[in-house]
Length: 242
Image (cartoon, rainbow, N blue to C red; front, side, top):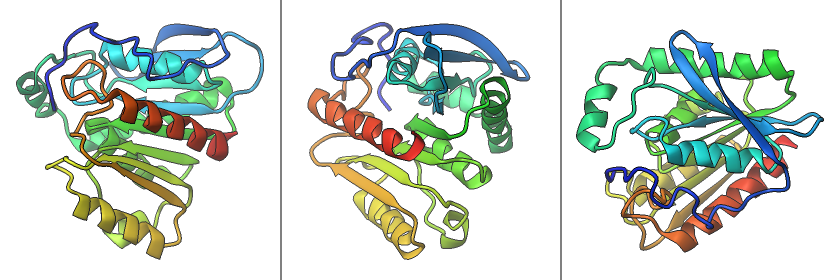
């Protein structure tokens, strides 16, 4: 994962803005976690999305992505799995990661789901995450049967059929062809198991780009692939949640 350059390219035009004006607030939804909530100002019922940050924490880039997703008609809660800590380097992120256990993150994300259901009475809810958050998006799917859509951006995968069989909703996976940490062979195995289990899925591998290519604040950013992946993500949520 590349280091984070604060505030650089956070408003990238690659990620389209929708028709809705958005309001934001910080919300306490789990223990010490302060999530970033973005939602349309318009009246009406909207589906919800749990958004999960990369290994750096809730950066300005994640907040921008939450606002852009909300502008397309979603109530988006960007969860805080780091209790307010934000890293700027992979070394800092590694230290923070070491202070938590997976069960804490699972409980955190499940609390986010409950918060959205109880506060907004949403009828459908999906999740999306990048890098560390992509793996956590999958972990949420494996630990919450109430989800309706799962999006994974180059996150660590599970390929065990007995674990993946818990998923009964569509999955969208976005991956990088030059990702050495999550190689194409692993992605294809993941896809094969989903197909064998009859789980609706779309798995996309963009050739010639590296891990974290969709982060406009990093030096691996690939604008054209990011734009295409974002449009596919919006289409997936539209089909799965609305």
